[in-house]
Image 1 (cartoon, rainbow, N blue to C red):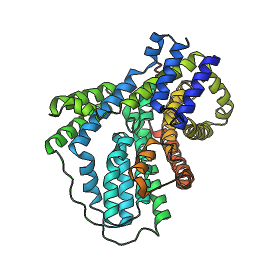
Image 2: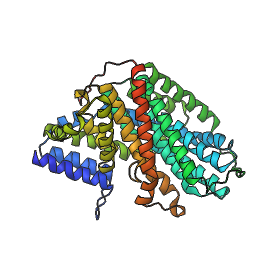
Image 3: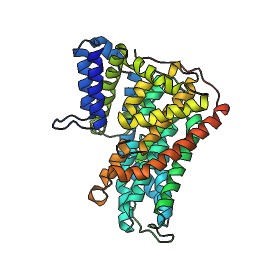
Image 4: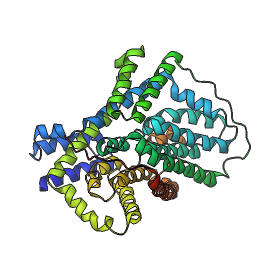
Amino acid sequence: MPTAVAIFGLTYAAIAAGKVPFLSIDRPAAALIGAVLMVGAGVLGPGEAARAINGDTIALLLGTMVLTSYLAEAGFFRWSSWHVLRLVRSPRALLWAVALVAGLLSAFLVNDTVCLLVAPLVLDIVDEAELPPLPYLLALAFGANAGSAATLTGNPQNMIIGALSGLPYTTFAAACALPAAAATLTAAAFLHVVFRRKLPRRAALADVGPPRVEKRLLWTTLVITALVIAGFAAGYSLSWTALAGAAACFAAGRRSPRAILVRVDWPLLVFFAGLFVVVAGVERAGVTAALHDRSLPFLAVGGVNEQVVRFATLATVASQVVSNVPFVLVAAKWIPGMADPQLMWTVLALASTLAGNLTVIGSVANVIVLESAGERVRVGFWRFLAYGAPVTVATLAISLGLLLLLRGGIPPHGVVWLPSK
């Protein structure tokens, strides 16, 4: 057990830091090294480590990334953002449009990718209009994080929850779509109030020329994506439906699959695979059970409503310390033993996702958006926290309140705990 604890601690410290000083070790490398150490130290056998990797999660991520890469290749993100943003004619309306477009796109596509592809267009528009970029970059990051909580495919941690919980796509969306929408609107309203003096009430925005798109590829990929989403809603396997969509794009896209696969975020897949092994190792050593026992006095107090608040608080804090994906993997082991697993899966999804708005390192989307601005915007930890803290508190309070209100109207589903094979 001490060996597993040491490996777990070092791995999670490296993940939380993002990079190990004096070494070329980032989060994916840390997860892979941790997995190798678990096997090398004899905590897990090679076969046990291989079986610990949840293939459904990896396959869902891969299929979604391929679909998103084809949409990006066709110019979908530039095209859709330009068509929406050109309709707004004032800086304040633009702020709302950025947050809502980011939230809507992130509900169906991975939020990190949405931020990566939409941020340059937003910066072009605000530069042409001579507007301060910070309000719009925050609107993009906050909107993408909040909107991604709506479905099981909006962000990586939700994908893990989908693979491990057994919740159908529509059941999850029925519980989380309205809270996620309310969170997106709340974030936009907060930014409107905070930056209202810096954004003129009436001012025409400069026109940005229409982006270049590959029309045939665009409509082909949109049809395939719509069919994939319909497959999710119909209850088909999330992972195999996503892979089927990726295969259809390969067959009909008339693009070199190799060129598309280069765009896939392979380090993220390595990160997930390594974490599955690390968590399996500490579970074998009894560490996750010990963490649960230590958390139980805090979680098992009061009725369902109070437990929801306490679990969400724990998820918010832990997501800042060790990042949301690692915490979801650990907390997933606890939920089947809770009084209302279906409710707690959705609480975990909302809290771990909305917690991403708290700090600049709380979400990869935040880092992507702020890095895209380069030297034009420099936001330190404390300045970001000044905006992120009230947004996180408000969005969590509103979304969890709505979740509890909706609880009576959502049919219960026989949730099946799906352990690592």
